Length: 286
Ligand code: PDD
Image (tube, rainbow, N blue to C red):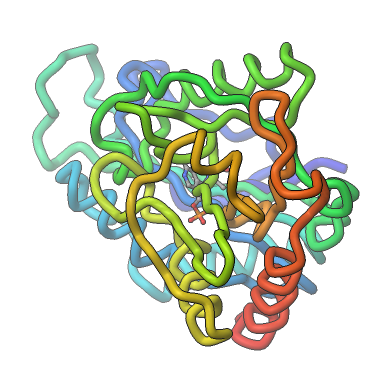
């Protein structure tokens, strides 16, 4: 089925959507994005994603080209027109097309480019991988130093994913100065007895929207929260491990670098957190 996508104010069949070759998103990766999940036709943690979009744009001095109601209308219309029951809405805002290639940012008269599209994922809430958990490898974190900005420069994360594929596993955890930063496209956690450990916020990781909800739900369920760096070695002696993202929700991790975590199957507390996360998020979906 041909999707209806959004490009700079128009809703068009995907093959009619075009962006200039001079767009700074294309030439310089000068743009940011968000991914919001859709369950039963409703947006999950939408407000969180919009807040982070504002922050990313602000950090790069790109003005937000759409108003709050316009963003919501865009999301809802794409979900409706493409008949999305379960899936995601991807949006991207770039600094736009200055008409030439130049390292300097163009003047504020250049209008940011906005594109958005949906991807249908019927088994989003129940992917088979949840039953067995993910295997990951550790790789050096060779990304730039402002990972808190959700930019479209995803080449190294993409290379990391391919290193995982070539190693026959599901994902890679980035390691910097001896500690885990995050996964290729998710935040990383370990559980030791009744403690949930995840790296503190900073420029080294993306401030995951799922992360913030999961920390809240974990704390409400009685887990102690420790936001600090942890190593691969500490992870291997943990009871459980998992990752979070808008599209994986809470995904168990059962193996790192060929060594099992716990008994090598998805952890009990991880499963509970996933169930709580999905139940609470369905309640607040809009
Ligand atoms: N990725 N860390 C990185 C590097 C990410 O790319 C993502 C999300 C996360 C989790 O953030 P959130 O919980 O807000 O989705 C952490 C998205 C899903 C993607 O690129 O597809």
